[in-house]
Length: 191
Image 1 (cartoon, helix red, strand yellow):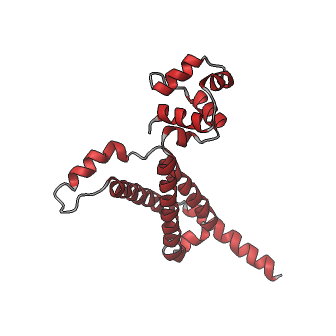
Image 2 (image 1 turned 135 degrees about the horizontal axis):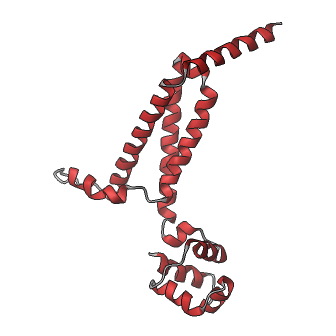
Image 3 (image 1 turned 120 degrees about the horizontal axis):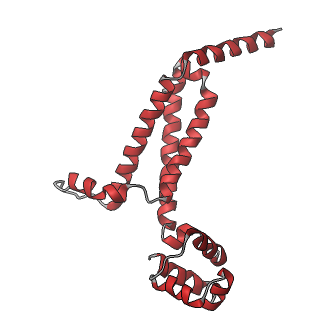
């Protein structure tokens, strides 16, 4: 369903008339009719107000509710993969051990970035044609879901590469400083 159909659907589910919705939004009834017919699209503030009045999310109104939930689930899966990677690889490296408190902050921000992809239907829609053409000669053609997963994996691999470069480029003076602080703390503990 599209935005106009969803506004109408959720308005009717809440048993709110066009007139009542118009009054709550400080708009005319004809404006609500235009929103529901699709001839006019509400601005983001009005869209937020409509969602609040109807007790739904903006994602529900624009038709991303299920898509967002699926993508959020994928982001949790990939976040767990990143955490496993961090345990297996990063903490075996002495420099990374010195910056572990910063590393977890980065991982949490990374998870938030992944979730932000979810709300925008990724960029896979733009690149869908390119991905489809790559696999046209396969016996089992890819589904849209598989293409989304491939795209998200590509994005994550790129981000992991960037994160690894950042960790490798972490200033050595800062690592030395962290090491000195750790050794000073250990001396204080033994006294």
